[in-house]
Length: 359
Ligand SMILES: Cc1cc2nc3c(=O)[nH]c(=O)nc-3n(C[C@H](O)[C@H](O)[C@H](O)COP(=O)(O)O)c2cc1C
Image (cartoon, rainbow, N blue to C red):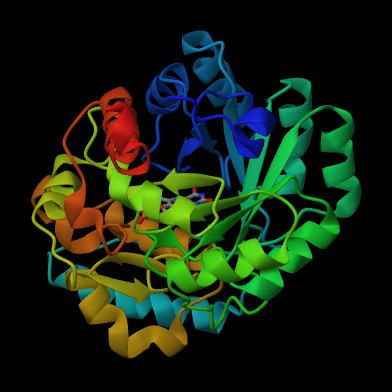
């Protein structure tokens, strides 16, 4: 079927479907498989060193000549953390770790090497990546301008109408509308401490009516019915994350994949206990134990540094209890299939709904 629209023209892809960037989960092999299938793979590089970013981009390029996106985190530097606050959070985590007979030293929190989008952007320009998506903020207009001049398509993440309008004002090529159903971090940037929790239907409809650029729907879309519904709301494209969690190309550990496979519609929770930013994950021992301590959580990504020290000590049998099992509200519908087959299945299902006469 002819899927051509303003987004496929912009991205130079066959299908208006994007695999969501998923830090620590979406491997270069997944990105390339999705792009080779005619959709758009997205390589997550949030927080990675410029050298690592270059290595990952080159790995994707070695597997595909098709367009793909590179995804940045556009948050500000958290500043220095009060040492007393750091020690307090470490004590909470040590108490949790004692339940698993684990001990470790508090990682140093002064002068953490925090890589921001601005450190990575020169690499993206040098490597001539075709598409850049970002979340947690807005890139500066001059940066968006530099990308535009270099022929790079830019896409920012919005969780409410005001964020979408801000992104358009700054000059993005397209807006990703992230509903509260979405797995992983909320992309909110106007009020990240109390992020909007607008459902995808309400969000997409409102944004589509208000902005001129193409809108990509993200959150809870797992199959062709979800894609068709998003298109009916006026979206020009969809971005699926949880749908790819159980793929062989996903770097999720086996216990994470098993937790996704056995999850249900009420399994997820919004938490900032893992990283300091609100995100949606499958409820586990860690989210339950941390719930009373939310007020002590440190800013992103300092909290992540502290909790990672605990995770590094955990044995495979306890991974599902302690790791962030980022997943959306519909993750229980994720299929255990190679990434290219998920792309093909979603498109075929959507075609049967959108163009039944042509089946
Ligand atoms: C495991 C996981 C990791 C994620 N990491 C990122 C990321 O690095 N950058 C980003 O922009 N979005 C990230 N997201 C959010 C996705 O871009 C997208 O909004 C979400 O997956 C859509 O909802 P769904 O999971 O219900 O499909 C992540 C989502 C998941 C599930």
